[in-house]
Amino acid sequence: MKQKIKAVWVIISIVVLGAWLWQGDKIASGQFAKEFVPGLDLAGGSALTYTIETGKLPKEADIKESVESLRDVIERRVNLFGVREPTVTTAFSRIAQEWRLIIELPGVTNVQEATKLIGETPVLEFRTLRPGMAGVNASTTIGDFESSPLTGTYLKKTNLVFDQNTNRPMVELNFDDTGAKLFAAITKANVGREVAIFLDGLPISSPVVNEEITGGKAVISGNFSIEEARILVGRLNSGALPVPITLSGTTVVGPALGEKAIGAGVKASIIGFLLIALFMIFWYRLPGFLAVIALASYTTIMLALFKLIPVTLTAAGIAGFIISLGLAVDANVLTFERMKEELRSGKSLSDAMEAGFMRAWTSIRDSHLAAIIVSIILFWFGTSIVKGFAFTFFLGAVVSLFSAQIITRTLLRAVVVRNMGKASRFLFSSGFFKN
Image (cartoon, rainbow, N blue to C red; front, side, top):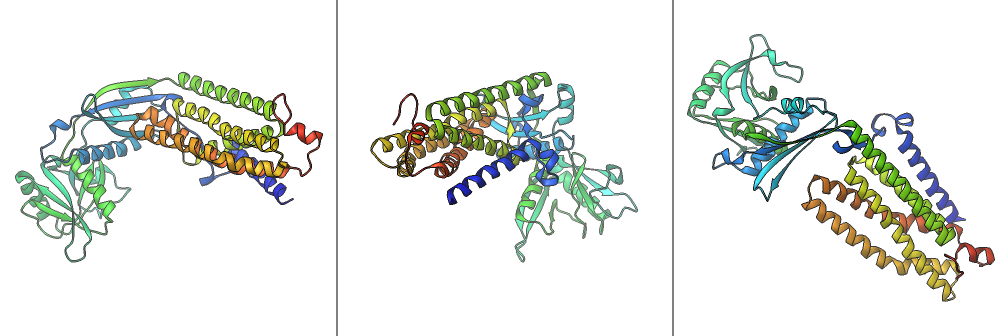
């Protein structure tokens, strides 16, 4: 009876999860209302590839740091456009021996508009408050500040340093000779007031000037965490050490193509699931039917994870999910075949089931571990398209272990009978033969 109650709870849990999955926007709200996130090839949009001209950086510049700072700036810039689920990534091409910036903008199919949104080199500016302004905040507009001749062009380098007395992180600014003179003039005229630092037209810091600062070196102190200070350093350096970018390639996917890819993916998933279900029920009968329920549970859990993480679904990702269905079934097939062997040796149905799971475990473990390792390698070294496939395949391997070893076993334990009659022998036989 205890096993039957467990099985009922498993089925109820999956039904509730499935209801949330398909009708989540109607039965849930706030943080519990999630939607699938289609990738560029499914939703349609533009993909822009830029070549990062790192060769124009000063010799003392840290290339990786400069590239990451550029990515951060462009990501902040893209997020201002209201584009849904944009992605900004950097990659080093070993063939071309160059750094590249890849920007995906779902829903934006006008390439000229997209390139205009991205712009070019980040712009760093130092601005002072207009007379009568109290300070800088999130609602302050660009019109509330006065431009100054001091820009990122005159900022040689920004460093993360620590206060010798309190050990608090601070941001150190180093100007060249021209910048030092301009900065001294600005600080002299604004003692007791804020000098705002703008990146791409938005304030990223607004330190208060305590005194005139000469010598071309200044420190921004405050209640920074180390990570906050490091981010500010990166943003300042992206303007201080401009990394020119050149558009080298564009890809445009129309909404019609995206809808066609989604339709094909859904159709392939349904057909694949139905064929697997028919085979399992025909060949393994009652255990096969329970395996289909476990497979439906597996599918529900996977789709729920796609929403919750969330996973950006691409055509390659859907392919990884479809292939993982076969991996999920393979674990059940191994277990059922072991069960048949144990039944032929004369064991009772319950003993054969437990022995079947135990003997099949090592094979299931090894096959899934191999799949997990391969998916990690593909994700680590692959391109963005390969990563989409690798990640869904990795999730599939992990969830498959849970589905085969927990859900299928729980359901089987609930239907196992002590005495094997004719009906039981037929239900637990396989193919055209009896055990």
